[in-house]
Amino acid sequence: MTYFRPEIKAMAGYMPGEQPQSGEFIKLNTNENPYPASSAVARAVEETVRRGLQKYPDPTARTFRTRAAELLGVEPDWILCGNGSDDILTIVTRAIVGQGELLRLLYPSYVLFRTLAQIQGARSEEVHFQADWSLPDQFAEAGDDLRLVFLPSPNSPSGTVVPPGEVLELGRRLPCPLLVDEAYVDFAETNCLELVARCEKILVLRSLSKSYALAGLRFGFLVGQPQMIEQLVKVKDSYNCDALSIAAATAAIGDQKWLAENRAKILATRRRLIAGMRELGFATVDSQANFTWNTHPRQPVKPLYERLKHRRILVRYMDYPGWGDGLRITVGTNQQIDACLDRLRAII
Image 1: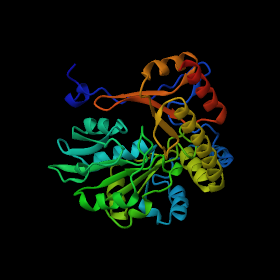
Image 2 (image 1 turned 60 degrees about the horizontal axis):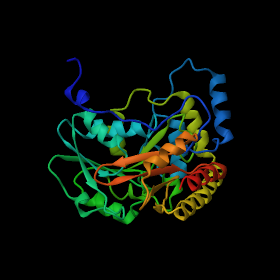
Image 3 (image 1 turned 120 degrees about the vertical axis):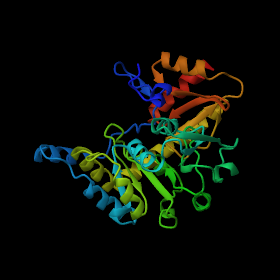
């Protein structure tokens, strides 16, 4: 076939984690929140349906931006909303990185970053984390045609963060925008939000999929200085957030009591998961996300993944050439984590 661009034909495409459509699984493979969203979400969706869906939604999601701005201490024009954080990543890449230009990312990290460069016909440069998951000096260097840098913090699969002071210095040194992907930041001890006002080049991305239990809804947002947001708005789809998602996201972010209670449960179970995996001999990284990264110094981990799956427990087996493989395990409920640990104990 000659219909498609060479870049599209050459790429493998992004592969999401397994999403079984039948049968009962303990699902600990895609970092979803194990608990239902705030009850305010259902009420907001029901009210929106009752009013009718015959009209287009607000193209800029003003109700969400207004509520989020109040909570985050910025003005609404500092916020861009999207159909999940992946939509925002696409918008930023399309707006900033031209064909043949360079996008820098870390390795191992979110594999969609590389895919976005391929779709754009751009080049991607993968800079390896150091062994302790800290940033190498190379990550801050200027480069020919470097137009955009992605920094996930907390990172997947490690769950580690880059200290805000280091991020600020990085943003000031780089010759291009630095997007800090904070999809998991509500489970972390620090964040980079206040850096946005201190450096025009720093953009902070947030998601409601994880901490607000809305992965099935698709809603994310970006915080940046207004002159940056103004240009990015030109690239987004006309109505990239539908009326139901805007209503639900506004209700969710408005229920900070629910968020605090949910976060506390996740963090308590995360501590139990880390301790349990280490008791089983795993080298488990101290995580600031809602998942853990687990390698084993003596035992291959892929057979463990396969045997867990056979017993209908899904975790994420990830193999990074040049780095190694491991199991990324989402923090589920206490009962789900107990079942996973018990099964691993029996296998090992």
